[in-house]
Image (cartoon, rainbow, N blue to C red; front, side, top):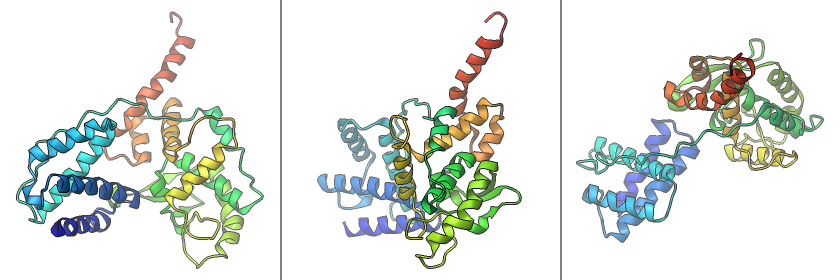
Length: 299
């Protein structure tokens, strides 16, 4: 299995350097492919060139037997397909055994989001007289005010902000960059945090340009952001868990509910395809229905 592990190492380097994937994405690829390697050991398949489409279908069957969600299975198959496509390009294998394998259709789930009154509770929990409270408030305002991904948020540097124009340069997926505007609330929170809280926190660390830092003054990680949001929601009367992506979903849903057009929301979210953005129209349809029932004379 030596060549197998070498191939995975080369693929991980390709994801990090050529594809510029986030650490979070790389970890998922590594986990999914390693799981397939364990399957190869069970089936006494010693070489990647020996993997056939029959083997892949057997692997799929075992995943279904574990009663995994269709979305999880689809991700694992997608990871393997990308891996073998890379190996084909590098002439490590002669054909892709996943070429004819179709992905399972995922369940149609609407994105979870916060109602505006629920968000108001979150915006009131931070103690902005403390450095960490100022950071948390600025973090919340930026995530909801821009709709950026958590992986994009941790990459923001101080010099990416243009406070006079109210925009931030976002480094998105696949080396794509875009400018995203932010409003007065985010601007006020950022100014307070940058001029006060961040300066106090950064003294405990070596100098760097990361906008959001932890209590040691080091750059904040995606996991750190999730922990911060979890602690914040526990201080409210809201039930359930909070995920950074819920703020992104809320950003898109609230824009559409208040009249923004789909193309603009697509640009703000950094979606390559309009179909990725169209999922939010299903959520907004409830708002349209309420408006219709309220104002149409024969509703």
